[in-house]
Amino acid sequence: MTLCMKKEEFLSCKTNKGRFLKLLGNHLEAVGFRIFHSEGDADVLIVEKAVEAASLTDTFVVADDTDILVLLISRSDSRSGRLYFSPEAKFGGTSSAWDISEMKQKLGTDVSNLIPFCHAIVLSALTQENPINPYLIQFGTTVEFRALSRLSKIRVL
Image 1 (cartoon, helix red, strand yellow):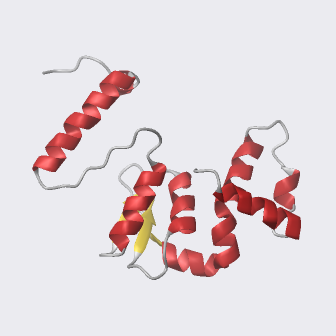
Image 2 (image 1 turned 90 degrees about the horizontal axis):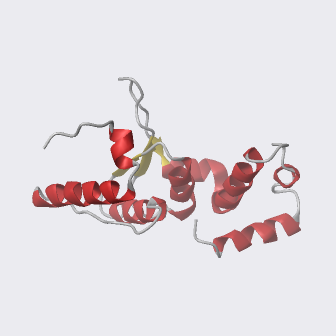
C-alpha cells in the first residue's frame, strides 16, 4: 500500500496514528521486542520502564523531551544500573549521552527531588507575558517554598 500524503498530515489524525503505532508494535513484537502502550502521554511510562530496565542492565533513553529528562532525574534509583539520557542527533550529527546518576549526584538530593516542580514553574513562566516568574526567583530560599514544592509529588506529571 502506498501513502499519498505527508507523514505529518497522516499522523495528525488520531485514528491513523493509533493504528500505525499498533501495527508497528505488532511488527516489533514479532521480532522479539517488548512493547508497552500508553493511553495518554507516554513520558511517565517511558521513565518507569527505563528505570526498571536499568535495574537489570545499562539503559539508554533517546528522546528530545525535557519532561523525560526531568522525570529520569527525579525518579531514577542510584542503586540500579547505569541509566543514560541522550538527545536525538540532529542532521546526521552525533549525540552525547548523559549519565543520570552523575547528574543526580551533581544536583544533590534536594534539587533532584524538586526538579519536576521547578520545571513546571519554568514552563508556566514561559507562557506568561512576563517570563520572569517571581516564584522561580525564590527557589530554594525559603522553607515555605520547599514545602510547597513537595505538594507537586501528589500530581502525576
